[in-house]
Length: 351
Image 1 (tube, helix red, strand yellow):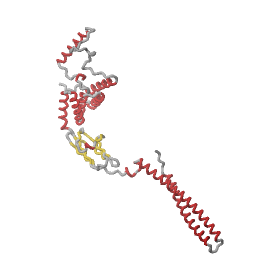
Image 2 (cartoon, rainbow, N blue to C red):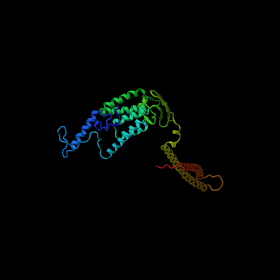
Image 3 (cartoon, rainbow, N blue to C red):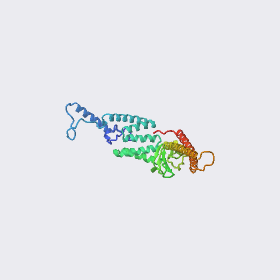
Image 4 (cartoon, one colour):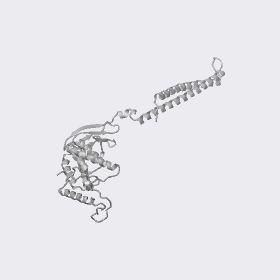
């Protein structure tokens, strides 16, 4: 006797009356169908008379076959038709043992028009391909749909396969060592494994798997392993080492690079401004030194010793101004040159 998945997609409405084709047609069903055809011909031979419902209530409109799919307007009917064609192709491929192609067809059919029968066939497909963890997950989904649709045949079929697959499941346990302050991300075969699942056995398919761990400013961890049927593998992800290259180059972080560049240009402007101010101050002090020297020359003409107090005071002031002017001019020149170099060598930052 064929199992309940057969060629019956079992739409998400849960109404058995809307399933495409029953898997088993009994002799009683054949006789009932023949009687329905005879009655239909009798009614058709009497135009103008409509068949009255058994309850005696007035007919609400033309009768619709319970086995015909409800035609949704527009794109809904087209999606349903595509899903039906994909389902038929997938089942045919499944029966021929072409599991990968069958799974692709059935999964696309399920995406377009979900149904319990399609999900059950997806589970069969993955089981046939040896992906027992994926099949186990699909049987669980099919079981939930079977309970929703009140399909005892499918419930028994899914439960039987789950009972057979569960002890065969390979399992992977990922444990993570490290500071909770580090934002570690763990991936199994490219799929993120949340922190709540760390340390818990996770069903995986038989074969090769890749475990990766990464965190900002840390060196990534990668481990490839193979796992067999019924095996449980425990993987320890060590504390991720600091990656020096993430901190030594400002180009790794554009924001840090921009901040450093802006700081150098600001320093260049400050240095240049101080240099200009020092040069101006040196010029003023030089002018004062020349003026005081002129006063001293007029108060003490000649080459002999000066005894005029006013001349002596002017001579002292001239020497002091000259010394200060020299210091200011030299300092101003150095600061201005440094500012120019900083401005020239620091690239402009554009927003």
